[in-house]
Image (tube, rainbow, N blue to C red):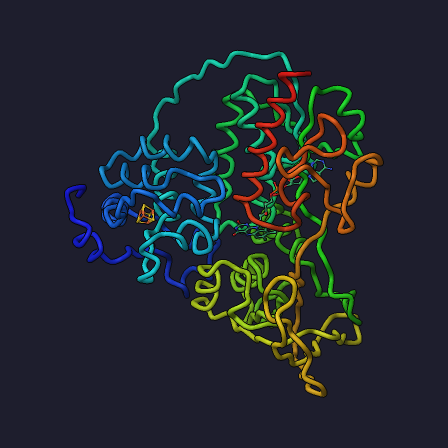
Length: 471
Ligand code: FAD
Ligand code: SF4
């Protein structure tokens, strides 16, 4: 394969990810994408032009050595490719599945100009899965201990990546997690059909093997304050995410049958409501019912596709802008359309109407149009005066974003926050105003992405290392 000329490489079409059939998969919670075969992966990798200055690497927030790992895949050296990726990314099986590659590495790939970038995400996923399924015996790594102790608050991607780098540097690392499961949004938010939980578990097992200590059901701010924790550890990293859902603040929002996407997805994913009564988490029966999800991001797509799998007759995405402005990954939107999700663009909910028992039965929608761009650069939706529609619904799910959870922040009186409640850090080091206390991920940026949270965790780990070498 490596002897192909650039012209020959460019003639090969991008290989499609095999997937479950849409009408079959909406009856189950198994993963939609089935993964590339070895042959497909090698063929896809052989499309790479091995650019002298690979722009794809610059597009990756953690600068995975994409050209090098893709070349190893093309040669069939899959385990070597996994080692190469893991130099920069400890969660490749996760990132290969959930990163918005079309906005990052694949957007920068020179082949994107012709509309067919190398399928970097699919290859990353293939390599990580191959390693998980084929690596028999992991080499025991000998790490020289420093005797320093670091506490990590939160076991999402930010906390996990920070823990990985710090344990490799020889520190004792303890991760404190509020929930009974580890992984943050990866386990309580993103559904099984997009990211099987066994994959997250396997990645966390890898960290346990390296010696990271995990403590679950431990809420910093309730079980112990940040100050108390700081006294017990030489340094602390806060990666508590943005777990507090925003609401619409419109009349009728407290009717029965209206959920935040957070609660809905947590019930289904983490508490396994989709396996009720085998698991004792209830959720409103939506068989043959109409569900409306408000929002246009990944959370909205996850909620609407979950509703399809729970038997909804009709499942709507209601979004106040148009498809072009939707922040969700393109693949999720594509999959949602295949699964017969209906999209109502340029509509904004203004009121929920209930029945005599206090259950939602209708939503009033203000018709919108696009005006001038706002501070995010996207065109601002503005109401079209007098144009209001009604839609009959049985369940409403609100997925318009999350803010920071006040449990830790309210009890950490000396920690500095911005007006949105996010922790303020020095962007070079991720250090907060409290010496030896660092923060990163969604609690600093607001809701963002897995890879950005991981990048922040790694940046903080580097700075913590330097801090511990002097203190
Ligand atoms: P989190 O993942 O939120 O983890 C924080 C952890 O801290 C949680 O486990 C929480 O229980 C714990 N915690 C909170 N408070 C405390 C406390 N006081 N004490 C102890 N522990 C505490 N990003 C993508 O890149 N691609 C996607 O496809 C994608 N889909 C998403 C779908 C959904 C439904 C959601 C909600 C988000 C999605 N995101 C996606 C965003 C991404 O998941 C987040 O940006 C990322 O998980 C942030 O990582 P984090 O480590 O900062 O926080
Ligand atoms: Fe290969 Fe595309 Fe990266 Fe060039 S930009 S090295 S073609 S993946």
